[in-house]
Length: 495
Image (spheres, rainbow, N blue to C red):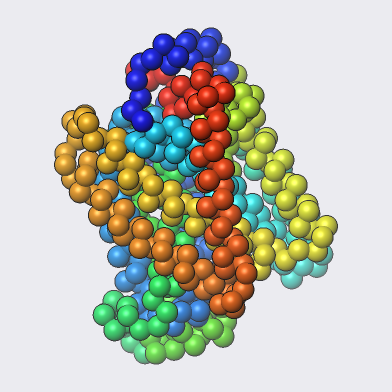
């Protein structure tokens, strides 16, 4: 459905403008570097280096992981061409929701909103499991302080809630410091492994045989999971300087940084363990591989420092996803899809503080429930929830590729055919293939037997939530035309 200036739409805008004061985020607070910090922090370089990459080598037996990072970086850069083109014409904290609403119609937009809420909440809550588990283990091993993981998670949650309540630029500064620290640590590790490679340097991980031997489909899923969060730049479009350029530049930079840096780190890890032994070493040491290799080349202090920065890295990723979820709540509340109170912004900080509080309450209930019931913070909370979130994001990427073509179908709006048609079509097909592989190889991510009910039950949650969203969108069309007319409209244009 195309957006038209109907009487209902004008009436809805009049109602919305009367409440404009509490429904506007802070303007022109952040620039390209700030958004890059949010995006890269969400993907968490140290978490990928310590967890994702060794797990990829270990569970799939694929040596070509470094090359996979470069291939997916190209795919996502092609996707970003259409995504960036839409960002020049739509400024909305709802990002995927708004793009799909404008490109495919309001009802699909609401379906996308429900999927996005579940996906980002799942990613953020799952990270609390990793954060609490890692920090509790460090406190016990280093200081002899034994605390339940969920108590530690709740303590970090309070700090994240405080930051989410404050201005966006304060969050950007915190993420900048944490990201620079973990990035430098990973870079030092990379250089040390390359300089002392026991079997010498080799480009074999970039060869065809390395790329096609092993569980290739599962390896692509692990690699794709490392990019999660790259698309979140558009969420901050209402708060950035010069949104027509900032979001697109930040997205391209983020994809390039993530793809090249992670490929370099995966290659350095293979060189440090030995190109012939990296798969076996990953299976033996798992997430400790980076610390084992780092201690060999940099001394025992690297392990201690690395564990500290791993905690801050996960904290940074959790903060980044918290901000994303809060802004989705805000956008949907402002436009009447969710309760209007969620669409309130803080009068002084310009933050989506009600959405931030709502996300914190939801996360606290889940973490507390898992903790009191004796749930596994890693095998269940982190593993299930983050993979569920990743699956939802891939579905949204496919839908957005189609939405870009739909949005520009009748009017080019000054964009070239590459951005309007070719790039979204190519990326949509590639991402659809990745989505298919994700559904059919989901057990590789969960680490469950092929016949486990979880392999279809968790993906079914994403599909079911999307269907419920479509139904709710259809309901709004007849039951609340004013709210339906506001879907995807966002904030008034910035000057």
